[in-house]
Length: 408
Image 1 (cartoon, rainbow, N blue to C red):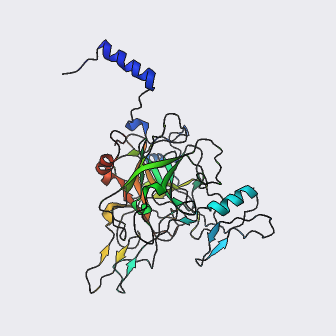
Image 2 (image 1 turned 180 degrees about the horizontal axis):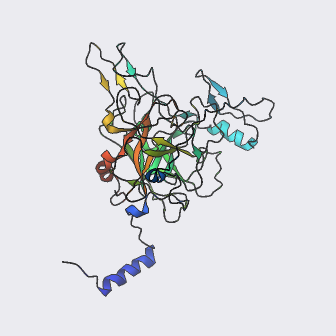
Image 3 (image 1 turned 90 degrees about the vertical axis):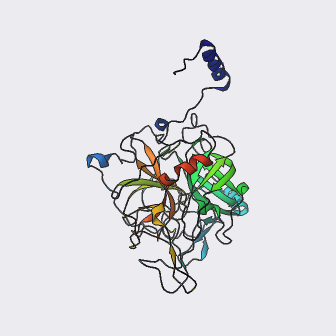
């Protein structure tokens, strides 16, 4: 039986709209659409016509150390190749005010960009010497600077305090729901969960500094949100990275109707196929050792090719070696999408939790196929691992506020 609304029902609805404003209904057509006005700013649709042009890998050029004859220096710290820490001076052409320098001395720069410890990388079967093999978390190497609204689903997740902060990425999948990697919410040293009050989300930022005391938002659109709670997948394995997925519930909703720099990315059970090209994005560093990074690091994106996931060494994976105490363990690669074939085009430190986005050839919109989890050295040509989002859609919807997240 089909119900027909009465005149009284329509009148009540109009009264509600007049008082509360238009009702937003999240549909498949409203997600996965960049805010640039372009249908396909990443050129992924050209794969359907056979005219796709892969990115040309370019080796990063090291930035010469700045001279030390400037009156004000940055109190931030930059990791050197040997793991030591050196003072990072303002680069030539960057106007850094004395006030900003004083602020950074009290509040600090983003000191720690999330890294996973790595003893050595395993290729093939488990190593015989015992111990844990862990690959590093990822950031954007190569690629392109994002234009305003181009990657409008990308957020920066700030974890910790201004004095000791970790940076990760995330994606908007609902007005109050952020999708990210579980490992970002654990302390590297203690392996304990970070308290929710130490987590915040920056929406609409165009560079990594936005959201910090010294950051400048020239668009006027970026905004920082506290979270109400975080939810980590109950089967998450910190050592192997299995089920590396979590969601953040914001304390207040994002106004996606009025905030032009923010949008939701679609969820879709479709699995991208080997040789297909997708897009990754983030605020992470721009080179494996950080020496080619600009200041501030902009939001960037690059195209990565999907590759078959296996234990041959072409894709990264973590493992415990077999010991007398018991059998070895290794990452369950069925829970991941492997992407990245070209050198100097990759994700790396600071991009953890960000989205791997592909094009739905049927609906013509973008959807999130993966979450940046872990990988080998940045830009080394070894495929990185991205949590397979399509396998977790029922869990994501169940853990999100009612009606906030849907799947196309």
